[in-house]
Length: 152
Image 1 (tube, rainbow, N blue to C red):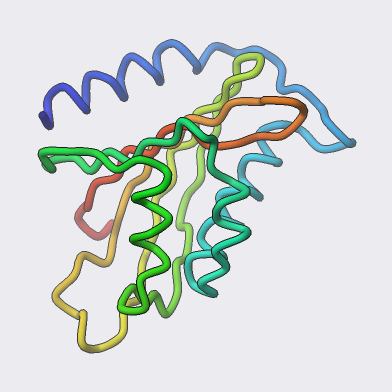
Image 2: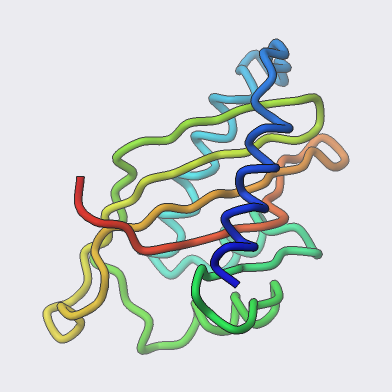
């Protein structure tokens, strides 16, 4: 599973890292819009803003965790995040790299997660590879591949 997920990421990045000029929608570059959306996603998780979180996710959204035996659908992910036991003290992006090709954008996000003290055994450093699509003038994420990483 891990090898296939990494291969998928490599194919996606190789496909979408061409030097195509970023689109401009409402005066902001697409790459900047995706960066802001990534930050909004982290903020929605910390503040438990289920409406904001749902607005960012495409109906076909899938979460793939490297090393896991299954993935989560949009509904499963939203249900998991709204669980009262799911608490993040902070989610801080340390790097966001965005590549754009037309109506598709791929963001590689390195994130530091602060958990409540009862969860200190959880991973603090994560890398997310998110695929965004432009649909009816709105950018929504269709796939997130997440994996814990060593502290940089």
